[in-house]
Amino acid sequence: MNVMNYKEELKGLCCVEVSGEDCANCLTLMPILKEICDSRGDLRLVHVEATAQILTLLDAWKIEKVPTILLMDDGEIFARCHGYQPEEILELWIDAKMEEHKALKN
Image 1 (cartoon, rainbow, N blue to C red):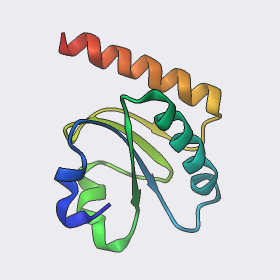
Image 2: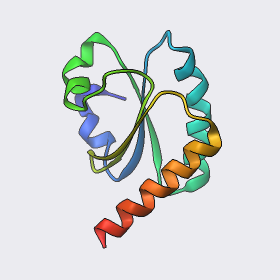
Image 3: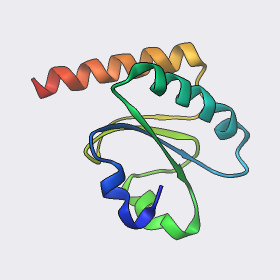
Image 4: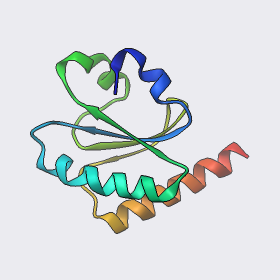
């Protein structure tokens, strides 16, 4: 993600995966999230590397540990999950949070 244009990159519905480069759970989680988001068609995956250069953004998003998964709509967080989750649990969580969000929007 380009930090300078992050608001542009977060338009619409997206799943933001915040990770650290030396985090084994993060490396394991990324391909799982990519597969889930690619199969859905209504949720774009955005990867954010937690670095010193984006501390202000991480603070604004209240990121305390990696991996953190954020579900966003036009840059507004509507759900968050911390730590590694198995694929089945992650799919159920995303489905439930997307349904809740859609119900609130209608």
